[in-house]
Image 1: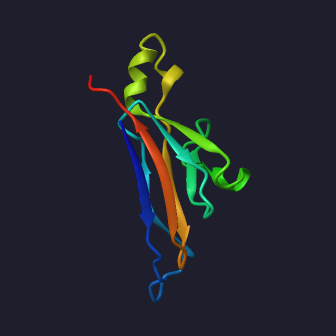
Image 2: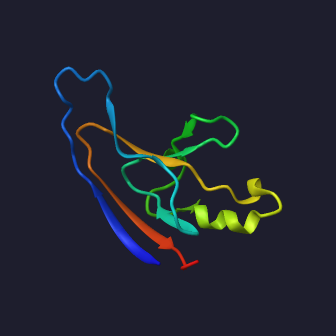
Image 3: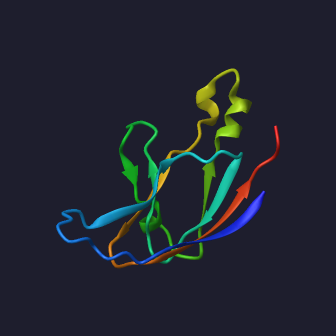
Length: 114
């Protein structure tokens, strides 16, 4: 288990870029049991809708910064769903930021050796 502070740096929009956002953290699932993420003052965390693959919720826009916490299920938790793997499916998530913004994210990764 570990506690991490991640700094997503302020990137300037490249010349010719048509999108207004960039992805400093590509779409992924965490490898441990679960991850706790504080709601940051600069929204960027997106969680995939389990019912619609490829559709993401901008979860931090729904809650107050530094007052709420998100629980992201990791891949190791899936071993507890041996009868029905859908019981404990790892959370697919990513970070998308507008160009010109920086972000700090405080995370607690809970993991045990298996």
